[in-house]
Image (tube, rainbow, N blue to C red):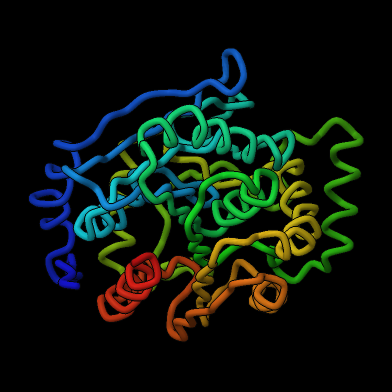
Length: 321
């Protein structure tokens, strides 16, 4: 298929002149409340006569705005797009008052929210059209757990992009990181910043070693949005969030064998955030799993150089089709 790529050379101008106005013309926003008083914000983008629905599940400290380019490509391919902002993110319910801190009581809270969004919003909208789930990092773990928990969902295919099957703990042994988080929670500090993290006090730097993008143009465009949107500025996690992220590894691997739908796992060759060996272990358990490796990409494959982004979305769209 023809893919009208947004090129790095004129990225910000093209996003503001062409992409965002086109998305605004299609956007419908709303909230769903899986629990009273805890609204989950979402947006729907429906072109005329869609061929199916793609539901996007974003990663840690992300938002719908970070996926404007991705939504644009799915719309080009004829798909309608639905996307929520997970609790503790963006315009959705926050379990803590500090907007800079990312916190969740249980990882399954994300899963329950996502399932409620699918059942109450997406399935009535889809009206029998094919349903595809796309998740990045933490969002991929949410997608996988949702399908494992609700196997009767009419999901045609799954795309797991840099999935957080097992998070890297930045040089700290996993057992020690888990012990530290369990102790912090036991001491009533579960909703505090993990040691060494703090509220984001300034813009991210493209040159930092933990930067997950390889395209400076794509990176800077979203950074400028974050600067003017306080609700997008969470960048650190709580002890309880980290504990839940570490504990979900076992259920993800154990449940993989029960995922009947075909799965495309997109793996970044330079990923500093999640363990590729855990992704490979999941692939071995999936009844219908295949891998697409992007050797030069960091964790956010969708924010890579033009050649990688084009190859990535062509591969994803070929798989869906």
